Image (cartoon, rainbow, N blue to C red):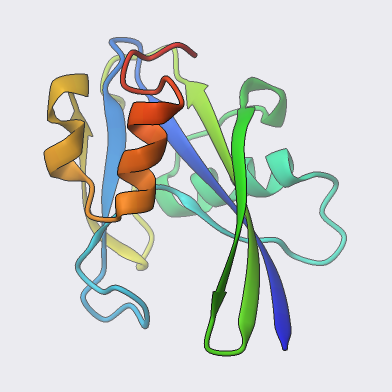
Length: 140
């Protein structure tokens, strides 16, 4: 069995809008689906917050200090021989709808108002976090 550590982030702008990415249609997993920034930890990374901050920068060109990301949920997920330990963070940028420079992993992005988040997210686990962990009200 393969073990992975994944760190993903719900990133808000100064007005409380959530950054939602669209995975590239050529992505090996859930191509074309809505997504949030994040990815796998690399050997030697200092913290899971650092993983989340690195992935945010790589996938969007946006920068956040790892200390600006607040852990709010963890879970494990098993799928076809891989056990994933996932850390979910939330962080707020100081700008309103900053421009994003996408990596080849994603093909589009949008800043979504809180009342539209449910329609913007595909994965039920992401919707659950938004509703049950205070993200809909932008408590961070």
